[in-house]
Length: 158
Image 1 (spheres, rainbow, N blue to C red):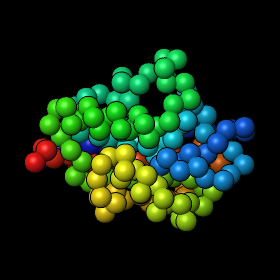
Image 2 (cartoon, helix red, strand yellow; image 1 turned 90 degrees about the vertical axis):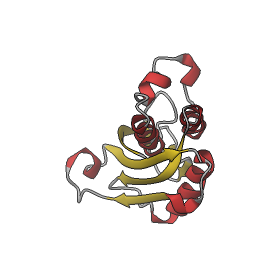
Image 3 (cartoon, rainbow, N blue to C red; image 1 turned 60 degrees about the vertical axis):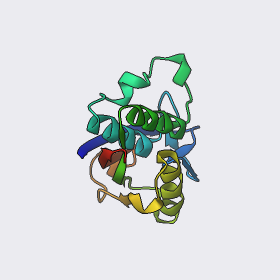
C-alpha cells in the first residue's frame, strides 16, 4: 500500500461557478483557474498521483494547455484513476478537507462524496469529505480563496 498527500488553493472571484468535488455550489463567487478550479478534486488528484509516484496534476494536465481550459475536474480525476490502474493501483480510501470561511458546505458533502466515489470507481464509504473554516484567519478566513487537503491510500489491484 502507498499513502499520498495533496493540497490545492484557488482565489475566489466574480463571474465564475463554484465547483467543489464535482458539485456546483450556489455562491456569489467561484474559483479562478484554468480548468473549473475545483480545489477539492485537484487536491485529491495530487494525493493519488503522489501516492503512485506519478508527479502532480500540473505534469499530467498543464494549466497552459488549451486542451484543459475550462476542463471538468471530475473527468480529469477519472483520467488520473486510469493512470493508477494502468500501473496496478486502485483507491483504498480518500480523506479530504475543504478549508473555506464561506459558503457553508455541510449540505453539499453527501453529493460530493457520491460524485468523487463515482469518478474513482469506489464505494462512497471509501471517500471522506470534511469542511472547516479558519476562524477568519488567513486568505481562506478572509474569503479571498478556498483550499483543500487530501490524504489517500492506494493498494494493488486485487
